[in-house]
Length: 117
Ligand code: 5GP
Image 1 (cartoon, helix red, strand yellow):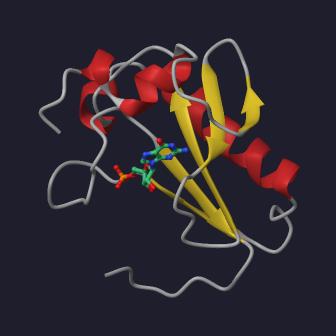
Image 2 (image 1 turned 180 degrees about the vertical axis):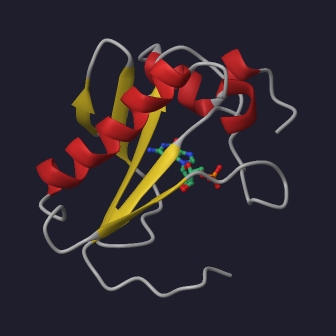
């Protein structure tokens, strides 16, 4: 989490320096399969403009709306939209955020338990 944001894995994926399996892309967001999937469908959705986390992003409601809409589009594209899915934004240390670049997880393809650990 101390990594400068422009050096994070997700910033490098946006710049095309690290390959990713792209699922969906717009001018403002990029969605790609998680490298260590926790469900049959596990896609990471990020803004193309680097921002650290949900708190830092909170003034930009337009971008956050686009991010959330992209999650729904990813669910539709991957075929989990009808059966149901989960969107998770891990934030900060206690939230389990390991990459210091805002991202939403779209998880589905199986029944997900609640509450999370
Ligand atoms: P966090 O724990 O920060 O909420 O989620 C970070 C996610 O990024 C993890 O689910 C992890 O598997 C994923 N991840 C880490 N490195 C890479 C990578 O190089 N490529 C892809 N596609 N996902 C990654």
